[in-house]
Length: 280
Image (cartoon, rainbow, N blue to C red; front, side, top):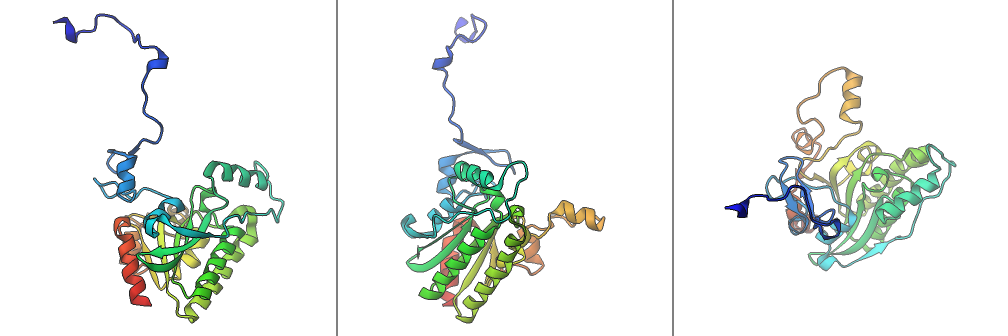
């Protein structure tokens, strides 16, 4: 019966012959701890099939989900940030931008594109949290404004997908000015009666929440998204009280009238199609 007993102690397999799973092959759900293969996640619009948890994704994944056959024309693809304040913290701002561009393979925290969504023309601006926490700087405001201009010129509905930690401190007042700039552009969109749909994803906070993220003809969100201006810890310390359960979640905001509805990412494309047809 020695076939199931270890006759030699210690691992004898040479390091070169060891088999290891590649990084990023599996995803562990933070809700249940269950593991999902990345291929399964992708086929399910990056939603955990067991618990419905919506994994944070970026513009590349949203474009693939929304645009027919993943075909689109990117707008202002090469726009990058300047350094108007010569800002330095632990490193100069240009160095931080360069590092983020190499790490994320993005030019800045938002990408804009136009294409077809179930055969309907649409312009999409999608934020990427992987680029300096999805912070809103001059480039973000300018690219969104130009995308709105494109919608105005071609009479095409506009979709904004927000995912941000707020204003970019390295640009100070220049960053805060983007709140007024994008809001003014959206007012022109409203005057032209061109539909604007705002999708809030996890997390949407700070100046983004205080401006274009909450100005849609329809404000919608993904399940379980953190949405607010200041973070829960800051609010708790300011008011000195415990916050309600689920405070600043998309479900809490829907219950209190800040959102029109919550949409599962797997249904997003079809729900947007219905909305656009209704608004046109």
